[in-house]
Length: 116
Image 1 (cartoon, rainbow, N blue to C red):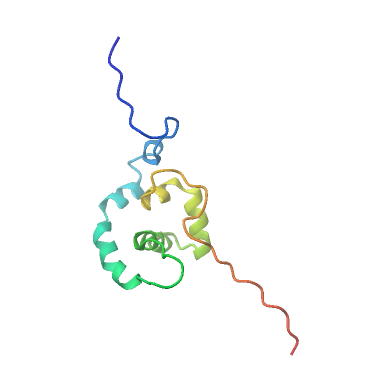
Image 2 (cartoon, rainbow, N blue to C red):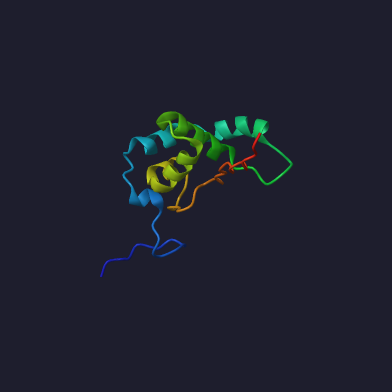
């Protein structure tokens, strides 16, 4: 019998997202080429806040804005398309497939009708 490959710690039945997709896809290549550490360091100074709920990662916000720039969806659409597209999730450095949007989607509430 040959030797077995050692198993790494983690969930036995769950593959990483990069193992499930085509690594030659342009979005994967682009994510690997961008210098995210530099971008996060330069952005974190201007988006830091001590009030309210904790802010989303500057990298995630930059990645979502870049996806919005490339494909021109609305704010709400970019969040829902992120859920549907595993390549977008890899672009945002996710390791597992997620089924919920990466940020909270705030829909405007309808204003009550007030006659003039």
